[in-house]
Image (cartoon, rainbow, N blue to C red; front, side):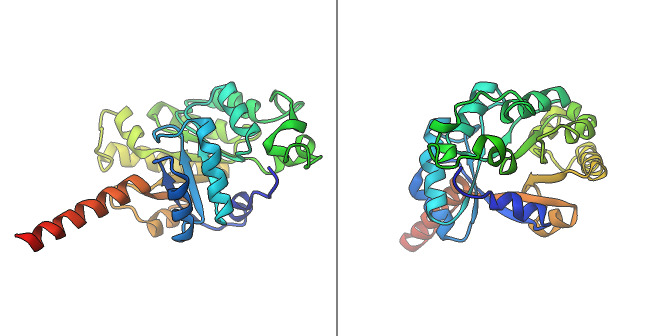
Length: 258
């Protein structure tokens, strides 16, 4: 972690940020997204092709192109979080966080003692510039950490105020697709029960004073989500953009040859 976490600073200043998903695991695509104007890119190691160690070249490519990387880890285990942080990721998104106990365990894995229980190896880590950032463990690791916990199950909604109170948790990130599925409404995020649950989650997060994030879904737009109080909205996806462009190009070619 040799640079400041400008994403955290921008969010704390009140800016609403639109970000893109990187699921293909290609450094070239990572660069392309940043050069196309997506200055915040979420490297998806949950559903994307890259494993944690494969994410590091992607983060390097994003940062070298002038962007900021967020790493969605595959799970919230201590080993995964420690490895992600040691390798230099400083904005983390953790999926499927069900309650405050889970959020506390995750945060503890991300914070050095006495605030947490992250294992120490600061002088040899990429995160510290291989020892060049001498105050990494004492200050920088905590000051620059942006930790987002994903709410993706209906049972987690009432836990939001308790998660928000956990030391180290910066954002509640609502996953509407899995939330709908947990209520028996897979791929039906416009069901009234789902809408009511999401509104409840939004209200609880706002009352707790914690930042909100989500994805684009259904007919929601960046503007409407911004107006609903979300500060980070992850929308464009490399896989979807490529697939859609490929289909459109094929349709155009077929029509010319008809």
